[in-house]
Image 1 (tube, rainbow, N blue to C red):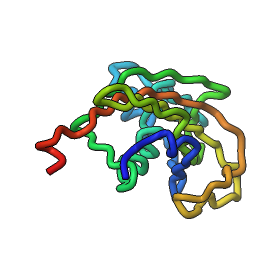
Image 2 (image 1 turned 180 degrees about the horizontal axis):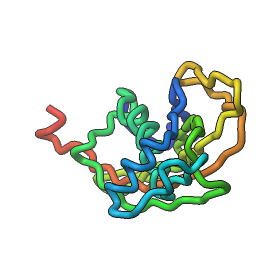
Image 3 (image 1 turned 180 degrees about the vertical axis):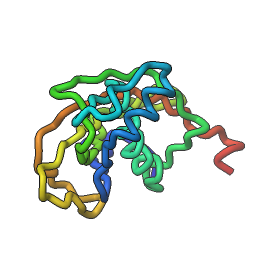
Image 4 (image 1 turned 30 degrees about the vertical axis):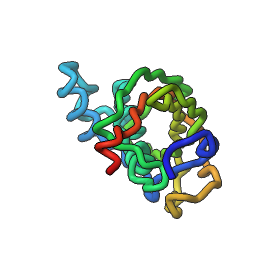
Length: 160
């Protein structure tokens, strides 16, 4: 089987939350060449693009799905956009859930739209679950990410 419109609605949920820490915010900020918040700030805010780091972990589950048969070497990241409801802050525990929103076949490729919801887990909630758990985790959605992926089907030689 390979990716098709039958994948629309399929969800991929991380088994464990991503722990946003001051150290991770500082490291990410420095990689971008911007200054992070003060080292002793109680809840420093992460750069908005740090949401992509968490979303990418959910993508890994999608790419690892053998039924989808998506090869990263034949995939181009065509577009990405974010919607933020709240900033990511040190101390947040974020659980990502990816959902396939659309798959359109075009000649020798598929155009795939995925959405990743980033849920801030409430204090005291473990957040662990089977990666294929279809139930949304508790907590507010702090950010959403939409990505368009262009996946080229394997050539006859590659498929053999």
